[in-house]
Length: 306
Length: 306
Image (cartoon, rainbow over all chains, first blue to last red; front, top):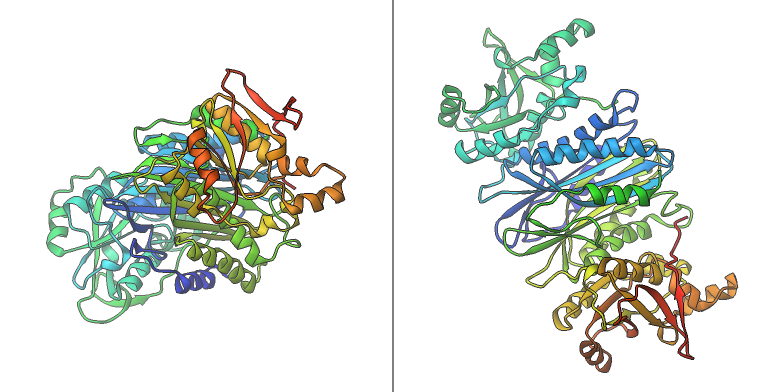
């Protein structure tokens, strides 16, 4: 079976409820709590599909398994509060490995103010699987959806992109504080975290918002790792910045005036770059503008799992 | 590794938070929402450990995967509201199988007023795994913990027990309505759903509450299936009622006066039976009283997974 087809099926059959403001199709679901909004997300890492044990120690793996979900909560502009962690261990797993994995998970949760309240542990045949569910709180703010981009919006991104496979994919920090700060002070219209690659995740915003966009080739912040990787792959560093996955940086859109204010005096600890705009006309699709001002259409091409 | 040792380790290292009233160690976690209490539980079914595909069709499997979690919310005396469903499919899974499994999951969610708001789908090597997380709402009531049993409490159970392997383990109904009704009207002190078997789950209440109990051999409601199964196994039907798992009935304790009122006029659609009491003295352990009034200690013996 193909995941993408199955997920389209899931979207089509999903139920409706007055308490669910956003279901399948964003970084997290948005639900109405007794008072105020909550966000809820879940992520699964499966050995052989998302990681190989020979490349990743148990502690780094635990950290990564929870950080990807934390990044989803960040992408909503919300605060992460509670985690549930379920693990399927191969029967032969040594207890020492299980403890180190758990340490990576729990230490990271604690670092970001998240309490692990439960989960389920099973053992059996088959590869290691880690599932992390995180509940977040909007604290009176409006969760930022993928679907809110408006014509004329500036497109911005935190950090630098590409080449994460050289190390950052295990060491990235979820932009939780930054996201809440931006949501509170800069009236974000739409946001996503870059997990599949800039062009593919930009494509998600465009699809959900029903708009098109232009990215400025010269402005895309390319990481040192992308340059290093490009020397090995023979590809363009820009290609890596556009299509590598697992940056876990924030990609967001906001009004031009808010963008100008943010660029002028960036109060965050990470760099923020204005990399494009949402098209004013009704044209769809994603375009790259080179230094000569020439536009070329790019396909959302993304990171492929192992 | 042994699950029980790992889970003890998890309990020991779990963090504390003022927003978490109950973490690992009950049917669900109890967390403080913006206003009012929420309960949160997660359950994993793994092929080869919890089910075999040759015994269980995809639709029945989907139903079971969510019903076990719904039963955990019932065991807290709370209303189930939201579900997240994550599935790891073997790569070779036919789409038709995936759809039928999903149908079993989603139809069951809808039947009990639960909205599926998201999840994660992965494909890879290894067996089928289904993880269901459910959020519930206390609606102003107090979630019923395992730890609240008091000396002198009556011990009661819904339905009839044992022999579920003959069919009920795929067809059971989560006692959600009954649990909320009991929590609202009968001042329950403690509750659990019977997943591991009456004696083992009774043991969980006793351990968490720091008390002992006497069960009345004559009063334990033995299902027809337990009698049928006993003819095959050569064991006592009572043995099956005490130790078979997956009854998913409610086991709860409450004051004698509440219990008398409930027995006198049971407003539920399922039978409710008074099967024992929490010991008044400080003695621990679980005892069975036969018709002659003789007590014998029983070990919490439970259901063993495949």
